Length: 345
Image 1 (cartoon, one colour):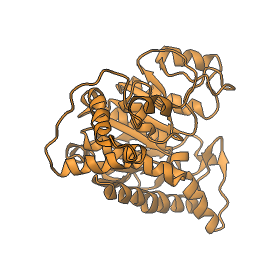
Image 2 (cartoon, helix red, strand yellow):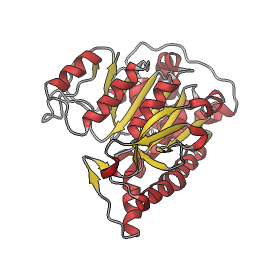
Image 3 (cartoon, helix red, strand yellow):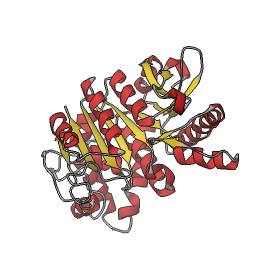
Image 4 (cartoon, one colour):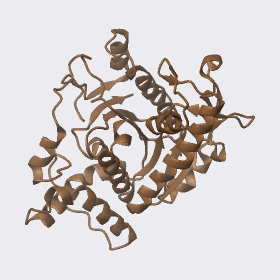
């Protein structure tokens, strides 16, 4: 993602495959392979690579050489991001599809194993709706936000914190990393306040403050915090928080290198009616101009505003990427091509 220009939307997989009959991570010149000592981290890397690379190239008799080639081509990107904090907001199609979910988990475990400090923030709208249906509670929305009365808030907390969060933690741990499940309530990580429309929306909250103290020892020890987007106010009342907003504010508080929002669209489109008009990279001025011109509208507006707010608070880059693509996180972080739209300061 080096050039700021609009490119036709093509499947990144064609670019990836041409380099190694598998998952080539960059078009750059190959650099020498970084040798790792055999250790628990090596096991973690091997496990993650097998889930990402092996299905593509195991039938190739030169698969071992291909794996070395792929790793060597990823080295410049690993060196760039190693030790840096990357906040990922997980939701949409990538959460509803088991195949895509497995892809996301494999990606974040691999990124963690090679030294990136991953913070994983999630919502869980579809699962909430499913459980509300089981309890014969009709979900209601106002301007895209869930109307959250006391009964609904109880279900939101139970599903996001007690079910979805722990399921994701278990998947990450099974894949070879060490995840720790939290919500915004834990350690006063996120303090909430009522939304300005609380009379209509109920317990839908805005973020009043962020205290990342509880996260720092976790990421310093190569653990992956998995954070449910539920927070409480000073009285202890729980609130449903937009997961994009939670991820953006956490990225700013942590001084993250990058914020990534997984979505159900390709990214920002120059022409909303043309799915091939993907904007690969754009700066703050350019994206504001697109908003003024009405090219960014609907559900993309709050995501873009979240990115702009994070950039204004010191996050280096933000990306809105296509969570419908397998291994979209690796495409975004470890290749020049990317998997959506990157917004820069």
